[in-house]
Amino acid sequence: MPPVLLAAAMLASGISAQGVWFHLVLGAVVVFFSLACLMQGDEAEGKWGKDPSNAVADETAGQCFSLMFLPAAATATWQMAIFSLALAFISFRVLDIVKPWPARQLQRLPAGLGILIDDVIAGIYAAAVVQIVLRMA
Image 1 (cartoon, rainbow, N blue to C red):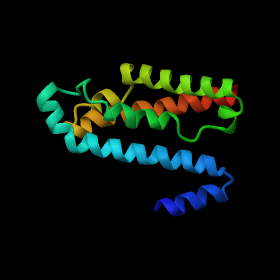
Image 2: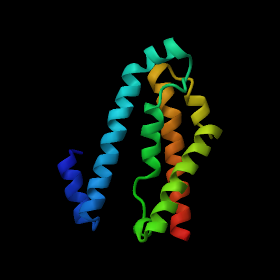
Image 3: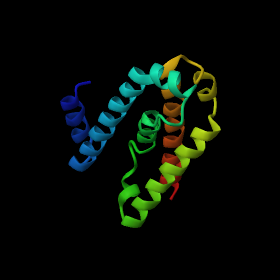
Image 4: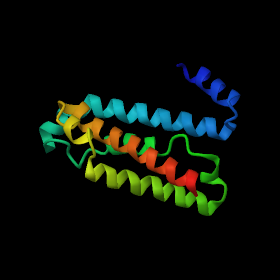
């Protein structure tokens, strides 16, 4: 979906203009860093080995998923915003280290895709954790 149509749909669904910008920027970060990872994955693995810790484009893209579609309560106060950001970061890091199914298995894919996919899955799982915790708070 083109960004203009996506923004219009988000505004029509009741998301604020700031929320629309937030999600468009997160989406752009995901696309940019995912493409960087996919395009440079062969070179990174050749230089530093499988899923190198020197490459952080995958971490950046994955972290964005945990911050998408936060409920309004996530930023209702500055304290809640800090809690929400910390929860998203910690959830992502823990899940990236643990690598729940199918992240560990898909990490074996070749080059950039293998580097990227485990972090995307960790980000999606972290998003679920963040959504559940924030909606219960």
